[in-house]
Length: 469
Image (cartoon, rainbow, N blue to C red):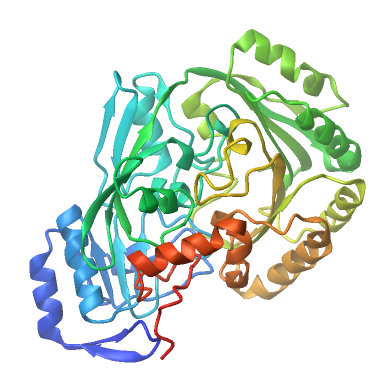
């Protein structure tokens, strides 16, 4: 193999000598892929099909030793670094152009301790895989809403999910994390060890190192009352106003979402999705007003296992590899004017795969002190997402424009905050808003653990000691 052209952390080109690459490959138990290797094309692809990048190297790590080797190699050669867990990220940070991808996806080890009610899982595990393992013991930890999301990215950004009203966010249930830092150290962060790092990992995205293993607190979770009620899009104004009132009085155990979307059969609908994580009889009473409202075209609410709940949005709503562009904010209230803007704009939605979604953030997740974790936007509010999805790459411009126009119309009513995991590739200037008053503390933490900004392909917190040239 000849020398490789690569991208270094100063965004300029460099050449990796063949001997250095060969030595790196020999040091790894996992596979290191270059552009000419079998499997490279599949390994470089991520969930968002708009992201089309070609790393110089993809290090498919099998354990901590491989991650240490990869981090040290990247630091020594000043390589641009991306860290991949599940690759399920709208911004496409799990890959890079010309640099090194540290790919954790082969790291699938899990161990449930049913007596302590904890689970330890390596950094390449997805939520679907983790849920299957923990549900064998009737246990779960709050996770995402799409099964192929990696536990790493979601937890490090906070972790919204169906159980957050009762048990908090994914990051609130993190007990400890094993981390490889930029200087090649292996640390275990918890409430007792490296407490500052533990604080930053709970919402600070991938800024402070490569997390090779997560330990979570588990909760008894078995049969839940969950599902969707669908209404014709022509009833959108009335349905969304009802939803606002219904969700605003919901107990902690009830998580709700509303979406303007298109069904797989082509029907334009307003969907209200619910998940009640308490006794079924009480859940039936709580959701009864929804089931009695209006004239739905379908009522799919029923008792479900947690695995079924986690499959409610898979795979039709968020298929892997299609083109997608995402804009998001938090809304404190769903004012009539906001709802009117959204209803009118969605009459011109350009793709049957696109949707506008409201996810009610409340309950236990909203009552954590804002400074207790790096995720500090703790309030009863709505996570509001415009998710444009389409198949043909040549149509990108019109879908992006449609999304930006709707987002710009609604943004004057938003709180100014945003869920860091929902920031897109052009939202770098909004990172500070995602962290609010916690941002200065995160900068100090970045200065301590990654002063050269080796881990910069994330929703980046730029260190103030980082060289500018």
